[in-house]
Image (cartoon, rainbow, N blue to C red; front, side, top):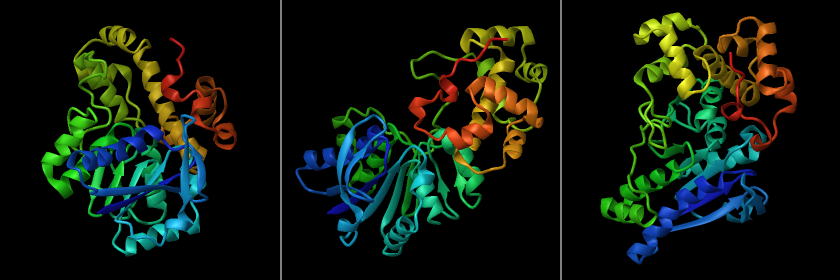
Length: 332
Protein backbone atom coordinates (compact mmCIF):
# COMPACT_ATOMS: atom_id res chain seq x y z
CA UNK A 1 0.00 0.00 0.00
CA UNK A 2 1.19 3.50 -0.88
CA UNK A 3 0.63 5.82 2.09
CA UNK A 4 0.23 9.56 1.57
CA UNK A 5 0.17 12.32 4.17
CA UNK A 6 -1.38 15.60 2.99
CA UNK A 7 -0.44 18.54 5.22
CA UNK A 8 -2.84 21.46 4.95
CA UNK A 9 -2.12 25.08 5.81
CA UNK A 10 -4.68 27.83 6.50
CA UNK A 11 -6.40 29.12 3.36
CA UNK A 12 -5.20 26.14 1.32
CA UNK A 13 -6.85 25.51 -2.04
CA UNK A 14 -9.56 22.92 -1.41
CA UNK A 15 -10.27 22.25 -5.08
CA UNK A 16 -6.65 21.49 -5.92
CA UNK A 17 -6.20 19.30 -2.85
CA UNK A 18 -9.34 17.29 -3.62
CA UNK A 19 -8.31 17.08 -7.26
CA UNK A 20 -5.11 15.35 -6.16
CA UNK A 21 -6.73 12.87 -3.77
CA UNK A 22 -9.79 11.90 -5.83
CA UNK A 23 -7.93 9.94 -8.55
CA UNK A 24 -6.30 7.87 -5.78
CA UNK A 25 -9.73 7.14 -4.35
CA UNK A 26 -11.03 6.27 -7.82
CA UNK A 27 -8.12 3.92 -8.48
CA UNK A 28 -8.86 2.01 -5.27
CA UNK A 29 -12.57 1.86 -6.01
CA UNK A 30 -12.17 0.69 -9.60
CA UNK A 31 -9.58 -1.99 -8.84
CA UNK A 32 -11.31 -3.19 -5.71
CA UNK A 33 -8.04 -3.01 -3.81
CA UNK A 34 -6.51 -0.65 -1.26
CA UNK A 35 -3.56 0.55 -3.29
CA UNK A 36 -3.54 3.99 -1.65
CA UNK A 37 -4.17 5.36 1.81
CA UNK A 38 -4.09 9.02 2.77
CA UNK A 39 -4.58 11.19 5.82
CA UNK A 40 -5.07 14.92 6.18
CA UNK A 41 -2.98 16.67 8.80
CA UNK A 42 -2.01 20.17 9.83
CA UNK A 43 0.62 21.49 12.18
CA UNK A 44 -1.82 22.11 15.10
CA UNK A 45 -4.49 19.59 14.07
CA UNK A 46 -8.21 20.29 14.23
CA UNK A 47 -10.21 22.31 11.73
CA UNK A 48 -8.36 24.05 8.91
CA UNK A 49 -10.29 26.49 6.74
CA UNK A 50 -9.67 26.51 3.01
CA UNK A 51 -9.62 29.63 0.84
CA UNK A 52 -13.22 28.94 -0.22
CA UNK A 53 -14.45 28.78 3.38
CA UNK A 54 -14.57 24.98 3.59
CA UNK A 55 -13.44 23.51 6.90
CA UNK A 56 -11.48 20.26 6.94
CA UNK A 57 -10.87 18.29 10.13
CA UNK A 58 -7.21 17.28 10.35
CA UNK A 59 -4.95 15.29 12.62
CA UNK A 60 -1.95 17.02 14.12
CA UNK A 61 1.35 16.38 12.41
CA UNK A 62 2.80 15.39 15.77
CA UNK A 63 0.29 12.54 16.05
CA UNK A 64 1.16 11.02 12.66
CA UNK A 65 4.82 11.95 12.15
CA UNK A 66 6.12 8.59 13.36
CA UNK A 67 3.98 6.61 10.93
CA UNK A 68 5.47 5.33 7.70
CA UNK A 69 4.73 7.60 4.73
CA UNK A 70 5.64 7.01 1.11
CA UNK A 71 4.58 10.51 0.10
CA UNK A 72 4.16 13.76 2.02
CA UNK A 73 2.36 16.57 0.22
CA UNK A 74 2.20 20.17 1.45
CA UNK A 75 -0.86 22.09 0.25
CA UNK A 76 -0.73 25.84 0.72
CA UNK A 77 -2.09 28.92 -1.02
CA UNK A 78 -2.02 32.43 0.44
CA UNK A 79 1.02 33.90 2.20
CA UNK A 80 3.17 30.76 2.38
CA UNK A 81 5.91 32.72 4.14
CA UNK A 82 3.74 32.72 7.29
CA UNK A 83 4.22 29.00 7.67
CA UNK A 84 8.00 28.72 7.47
CA UNK A 85 9.30 27.34 10.75
CA UNK A 86 12.26 25.29 11.99
CA UNK A 87 9.77 22.63 13.09
CA UNK A 88 8.21 22.25 9.64
CA UNK A 89 11.58 22.35 7.87
CA UNK A 90 12.97 19.72 10.22
CA UNK A 91 10.01 17.43 9.62
CA UNK A 92 10.26 17.76 5.84
CA UNK A 93 14.00 17.16 5.85
CA UNK A 94 13.52 14.15 8.09
CA UNK A 95 11.02 12.57 5.72
CA UNK A 96 13.33 13.32 2.80
CA UNK A 97 16.25 11.63 4.55
CA UNK A 98 14.09 8.53 4.98
CA UNK A 99 13.56 8.38 1.21
CA UNK A 100 10.02 9.68 1.31
CA UNK A 101 8.68 11.36 -1.84
CA UNK A 102 7.78 15.00 -1.21
CA UNK A 103 5.19 16.95 -3.15
CA UNK A 104 3.80 20.46 -3.20
CA UNK A 105 0.50 21.86 -4.41
CA UNK A 106 0.13 25.55 -5.32
CA UNK A 107 2.41 27.63 -3.06
CA UNK A 108 3.51 24.55 -1.16
CA UNK A 109 6.52 24.89 -3.45
CA UNK A 110 7.73 27.77 -1.26
CA UNK A 111 7.69 25.50 1.79
CA UNK A 112 9.82 22.82 0.14
CA UNK A 113 12.12 25.45 -1.34
CA UNK A 114 12.66 27.24 1.97
CA UNK A 115 13.53 23.90 3.57
CA UNK A 116 16.26 23.46 0.94
CA UNK A 117 14.54 20.42 -0.56
CA UNK A 118 14.32 21.69 -4.14
CA UNK A 119 17.89 22.98 -4.57
CA UNK A 120 19.34 22.04 -7.95
CA UNK A 121 15.97 20.78 -9.13
CA UNK A 122 13.21 21.93 -11.44
CA UNK A 123 9.92 23.09 -9.91
CA UNK A 124 6.71 24.96 -10.62
CA UNK A 125 3.88 26.76 -8.80
CA UNK A 126 0.83 28.83 -9.70
CA UNK A 127 1.77 31.40 -12.33
CA UNK A 128 0.99 34.28 -9.93
CA UNK A 129 4.02 33.24 -7.88
CA UNK A 130 6.57 32.34 -10.55
CA UNK A 131 8.42 35.66 -10.42
CA UNK A 132 8.67 35.56 -6.63
CA UNK A 133 10.07 32.02 -6.68
CA UNK A 134 12.67 32.98 -9.27
CA UNK A 135 13.74 35.94 -7.16
CA UNK A 136 13.82 34.07 -3.84
CA UNK A 137 15.36 30.76 -4.92
CA UNK A 138 17.93 31.22 -7.70
CA UNK A 139 19.26 27.70 -7.06
CA UNK A 140 15.99 26.20 -8.35
CA UNK A 141 14.97 26.06 -12.01
CA UNK A 142 11.46 27.54 -11.92
CA UNK A 143 9.22 26.77 -14.91
CA UNK A 144 5.64 27.70 -15.71
CA UNK A 145 4.55 24.09 -16.29
CA UNK A 146 1.44 22.41 -14.94
CA UNK A 147 3.48 20.04 -12.81
CA UNK A 148 7.04 18.78 -12.48
CA UNK A 149 8.36 15.42 -11.32
CA UNK A 150 12.04 15.60 -10.48
CA UNK A 151 13.28 12.33 -9.02
CA UNK A 152 11.42 11.92 -5.70
CA UNK A 153 9.93 15.42 -5.65
CA UNK A 154 6.95 16.84 -7.44
CA UNK A 155 5.48 20.31 -7.59
CA UNK A 156 2.09 21.25 -9.04
CA UNK A 157 0.63 24.64 -9.93
CA UNK A 158 -2.73 23.70 -8.39
CA UNK A 159 -6.28 23.62 -9.71
CA UNK A 160 -7.12 20.91 -12.22
CA UNK A 161 -3.43 20.20 -12.75
CA UNK A 162 -3.47 18.37 -9.42
CA UNK A 163 -5.60 15.68 -11.10
CA UNK A 164 -3.00 15.28 -13.86
CA UNK A 165 -0.30 15.00 -11.20
CA UNK A 166 -2.12 12.25 -9.32
CA UNK A 167 -2.90 10.37 -12.54
CA UNK A 168 0.78 10.43 -13.51
CA UNK A 169 1.62 9.05 -10.07
CA UNK A 170 -0.92 6.25 -10.53
CA UNK A 171 0.40 5.58 -14.03
CA UNK A 172 3.97 5.22 -12.74
CA UNK A 173 2.94 2.69 -10.10
CA UNK A 174 0.02 0.77 -11.61
CA UNK A 175 0.20 1.39 -15.35
CA UNK A 176 -1.88 3.10 -17.99
CA UNK A 177 -5.01 0.98 -17.64
CA UNK A 178 -5.63 1.93 -14.01
CA UNK A 179 -4.67 5.55 -14.69
CA UNK A 180 -7.02 5.74 -17.69
CA UNK A 181 -9.90 4.24 -15.74
CA UNK A 182 -9.35 6.62 -12.84
CA UNK A 183 -9.26 9.56 -15.27
CA UNK A 184 -12.56 8.48 -16.81
CA UNK A 185 -14.12 8.03 -13.41
CA UNK A 186 -13.35 11.62 -12.36
CA UNK A 187 -14.29 12.88 -15.88
CA UNK A 188 -10.78 14.04 -16.68
CA UNK A 189 -10.88 13.63 -20.44
CA UNK A 190 -7.22 14.13 -21.24
CA UNK A 191 -4.10 13.50 -19.20
CA UNK A 192 -1.89 16.49 -19.87
CA UNK A 193 1.91 16.18 -19.90
CA UNK A 194 3.70 17.97 -17.11
CA UNK A 195 5.42 20.41 -19.46
CA UNK A 196 2.07 21.73 -20.67
CA UNK A 197 2.11 25.49 -20.15
CA UNK A 198 -0.24 26.91 -17.54
CA UNK A 199 -1.46 29.59 -19.92
CA UNK A 200 -1.01 28.42 -23.52
CA UNK A 201 -1.04 31.27 -26.00
CA UNK A 202 -2.91 29.54 -28.82
CA UNK A 203 -6.38 29.29 -27.28
CA UNK A 204 -8.73 30.58 -24.61
CA UNK A 205 -10.57 28.36 -22.11
CA UNK A 206 -13.97 29.21 -23.63
CA UNK A 207 -12.75 28.38 -27.11
CA UNK A 208 -12.24 31.83 -28.62
CA UNK A 209 -9.08 32.20 -30.60
CA UNK A 210 -6.72 35.13 -30.15
CA UNK A 211 -5.53 36.76 -33.38
CA UNK A 212 -1.91 35.73 -33.98
CA UNK A 213 -0.76 39.35 -33.98
CA UNK A 214 -2.19 39.91 -30.50
CA UNK A 215 -0.71 36.65 -29.17
CA UNK A 216 2.70 37.58 -30.59
CA UNK A 217 2.48 41.09 -29.16
CA UNK A 218 1.60 39.78 -25.70
CA UNK A 219 4.48 37.33 -25.87
CA UNK A 220 6.87 40.16 -26.70
CA UNK A 221 5.51 42.20 -23.79
CA UNK A 222 5.87 39.30 -21.38
CA UNK A 223 9.47 38.70 -22.41
CA UNK A 224 10.38 42.40 -22.10
CA UNK A 225 9.11 43.33 -18.66
CA UNK A 226 12.33 44.93 -17.44
CA UNK A 227 13.78 46.16 -20.73
CA UNK A 228 10.64 47.78 -22.12
CA UNK A 229 10.18 48.01 -25.87
CA UNK A 230 7.97 50.56 -27.60
CA UNK A 231 4.53 49.86 -29.04
CA UNK A 232 5.71 50.94 -32.54
CA UNK A 233 8.53 48.37 -32.30
CA UNK A 234 6.05 45.69 -31.20
CA UNK A 235 3.80 46.57 -34.14
CA UNK A 236 6.72 46.29 -36.52
CA UNK A 237 7.80 42.94 -35.10
CA UNK A 238 4.35 41.39 -35.43
CA UNK A 239 3.94 42.79 -38.93
CA UNK A 240 0.91 45.07 -38.62
CA UNK A 241 0.38 48.80 -38.23
CA UNK A 242 0.16 50.39 -34.82
CA UNK A 243 -3.42 51.43 -35.63
CA UNK A 244 -4.38 47.80 -36.39
CA UNK A 245 -2.70 46.60 -33.20
CA UNK A 246 -4.56 49.21 -31.18
CA UNK A 247 -7.90 48.13 -32.67
CA UNK A 248 -7.24 44.45 -32.04
CA UNK A 249 -6.26 45.06 -28.40
CA UNK A 250 -9.36 47.17 -27.81
CA UNK A 251 -11.51 44.40 -29.29
CA UNK A 252 -9.83 41.53 -27.40
CA UNK A 253 -8.45 43.04 -24.17
CA UNK A 254 -10.68 46.15 -24.02
CA UNK A 255 -7.68 48.38 -23.49
CA UNK A 256 -4.89 49.87 -25.56
CA UNK A 257 -1.63 47.97 -26.14
CA UNK A 258 0.23 50.55 -24.04
CA UNK A 259 -2.14 50.14 -21.09
CA UNK A 260 -2.11 46.35 -21.39
CA UNK A 261 1.70 46.37 -21.40
CA UNK A 262 1.81 48.71 -18.41
CA UNK A 263 -0.64 46.56 -16.48
CA UNK A 264 1.18 43.25 -16.93
CA UNK A 265 4.35 44.96 -15.70
CA UNK A 266 2.44 46.25 -12.69
CA UNK A 267 1.07 42.75 -12.11
CA UNK A 268 4.65 41.49 -11.99
CA UNK A 269 5.55 44.33 -9.64
CA UNK A 270 2.73 43.49 -7.26
CA UNK A 271 3.82 39.88 -7.08
CA UNK A 272 7.34 40.97 -6.14
CA UNK A 273 6.04 43.56 -3.66
CA UNK A 274 3.73 41.21 -1.77
CA UNK A 275 5.61 37.91 -2.10
CA UNK A 276 9.25 38.93 -1.61
CA UNK A 277 11.34 41.32 0.46
CA UNK A 278 13.05 42.69 -2.65
CA UNK A 279 13.85 46.42 -2.32
CA UNK A 280 11.00 48.47 -3.79
CA UNK A 281 13.38 50.45 -5.97
CA UNK A 282 14.59 47.16 -7.46
CA UNK A 283 11.00 46.00 -7.93
CA UNK A 284 10.31 49.08 -10.02
CA UNK A 285 13.39 48.52 -12.18
CA UNK A 286 12.63 44.81 -12.57
CA UNK A 287 9.16 45.70 -13.80
CA UNK A 288 10.26 48.36 -16.27
CA UNK A 289 9.64 51.42 -14.06
CA UNK A 290 13.06 52.91 -13.24
CA UNK A 291 11.52 56.21 -12.05
CA UNK A 292 10.46 55.42 -8.48
CA UNK A 293 8.09 58.37 -8.18
CA UNK A 294 6.27 57.41 -11.39
CA UNK A 295 6.21 53.77 -10.30
CA UNK A 296 4.56 54.59 -6.97
CA UNK A 297 2.04 56.88 -8.66
CA UNK A 298 0.80 54.38 -11.25
CA UNK A 299 0.96 51.50 -8.74
CA UNK A 300 -1.40 53.41 -6.48
CA UNK A 301 -3.57 54.34 -9.44
CA UNK A 302 -4.01 50.68 -10.34
CA UNK A 303 -4.16 48.99 -6.93
CA UNK A 304 -5.40 51.72 -4.62
CA UNK A 305 -2.31 51.83 -2.37
CA UNK A 306 1.40 52.49 -2.73
CA UNK A 307 3.95 49.67 -3.01
CA UNK A 308 5.12 50.31 0.55
CA UNK A 309 1.56 50.24 1.89
CA UNK A 310 0.84 47.09 -0.09
CA UNK A 311 3.84 45.33 1.40
CA UNK A 312 3.03 46.38 4.97
CA UNK A 313 -0.77 46.33 4.93
CA UNK A 314 -1.81 44.38 1.89
CA UNK A 315 -0.96 40.84 3.01
CA UNK A 316 -4.55 39.80 3.50
CA UNK A 317 -6.43 37.03 1.68
CA UNK A 318 -6.49 37.88 -1.98
CA UNK A 319 -10.28 37.55 -2.29
CA UNK A 320 -10.55 40.74 -0.23
CA UNK A 321 -8.25 42.56 -2.60
CA UNK A 322 -8.48 43.57 -6.23
CA UNK A 323 -5.96 41.10 -7.65
CA UNK A 324 -4.36 42.60 -10.79
CA UNK A 325 -6.01 40.50 -13.47
CA UNK A 326 -9.48 41.30 -12.14
CA UNK A 327 -9.02 45.02 -11.66
CA UNK A 328 -10.36 47.03 -14.62
CA UNK A 329 -7.85 49.46 -16.01
CA UNK A 330 -8.58 52.97 -17.18
CA UNK A 331 -8.75 53.40 -20.91
CA UNK A 332 -6.24 55.65 -22.57
